[in-house]
Image (tube, rainbow, N blue to C red; front, side):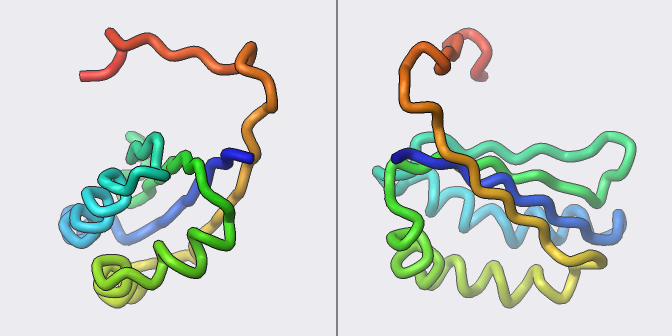
Length: 111
């Protein structure tokens, strides 16, 4: 069953650019994986140190934990960003509804 990770990470606002620089290689690495169907990063406009990562995967959760999170680019990201966190990371895992009737996207919404 395809699933989605929704990850909230909070760093001090003055470390936002440092966090994004460390995130970029993992963003590019995950997005290049054939099993990753969507990856978008959101920033809270009211709290510029708060980010939400939304990743959709056509893989099992075990594949993500046993393969993806052990890649070198992820290890570097974790080592660089975890010391920046000012709150514990929040991770939610959501499963996609089994019917395509609940999936829509508009190509013109993507830049």
